[in-house]
Image (cartoon, rainbow, N blue to C red; front, side):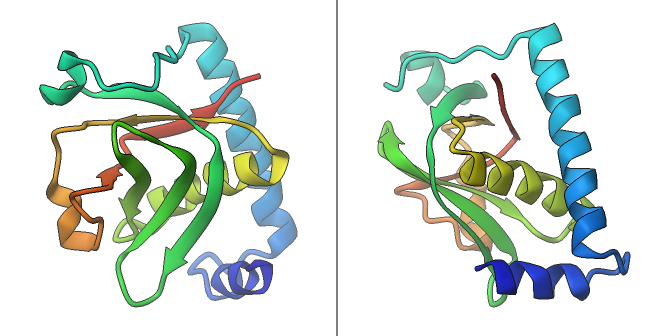
Amino acid sequence: MFNSLHRVIDASPWGMSLGIFCAIAVALVGMLLIGSMLFGISMPAQTMSAAQRSGTPVDISCTPAQVAVFADAPRLHVRCAASVGGILYFALSTSDAAQAARVLSVLTTAQVAGRTLIIRYDPADLSGASIGCQVNDCRLIRAAGFGP
């Protein structure tokens, strides 16, 4: 997996090395941590409430079991160790390379560090099907981070 990630970074339009990428990732994660402490990210229970089913974005906890970037589909995803209301995967389109790189950095940092992610998503949004996110067990990522 790391060899694949290194190839993706080497092919990046920015031409940055793995060391520079990691330094930027650490800085972004630090900003996310500070932001989560200042603004407080809620971590509700892992069952879906009526508000979650209504289309209101919610924050959930996810222990990342797998992070993947697909060459044949325009997406990246994280698979959580446990499903939340039947949702196991959270995905993001890679059409915006800068946004995808930021989210990928957060997801992989959390997985490598053994941290629990906080993912914001809309349970009623099924538009991820257009990028290969299955409607029965996958939702689009609206925001991702992790706290202390």
